Image 1: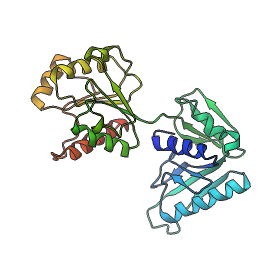
Image 2: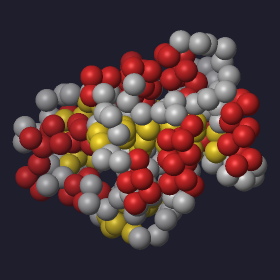
Image 3: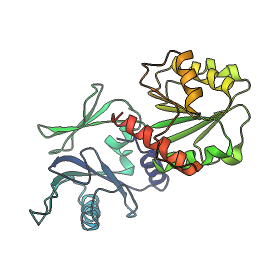
Length: 296
């Protein structure tokens, strides 16, 4: 639900101004659609928004419905049905619900305190509950189930100039970005959400890395790489990538017995033929996204 960190930023910015918010969620689709179930757009009472659900005409219609829900203080169920049946576009169904600042945004506000759980909303009467059950996003018997996710988090080891593009690309993907290093070069990683400076290399072995979804080692030091890798392999991180040539990476695979470890990607990134740091950042983020979505 909040895998995109920009949604959280939008809510907090709206809260700081005392603005009401409308959430428009795709609750069901039939056929081929741009937005899939679970996709969401947030609109505040100033008309500002975060998210895209489709064409300009659909977008404008959702903005108009959002204004209506704020005025009526009632939710709206809406179906987008293509006028041209031969267009190849399917049907999208939306639940558009107001959340008011004076009520601490009710269901939306509670979601911010219940990451990892499931929001269950009745689209007929706006009743809801937060469930501990891990449920897939679906509409069933007029109840819309939606997993409350934290923003996807990327941990980057190293802070050299080659890291700047990766931080920027990850921010474009709206991931939470954290950089960790012994000699932190702040000027190259100033766009990261968090910076962690190690006092000594071995300190990484004492840190809990389970809160991160993906980690990429860009330290360019074999000894340092091995220490970082040792710490990561004892964690639950689902993607571990290391930058390096194929020969050295094969040695590392053998050294740590990683032949069957599906979390480990070395050399990191898809081979897209580029050699610039921007291209390498793109290849890394593409591979992480593929892993995130279960494609590799």
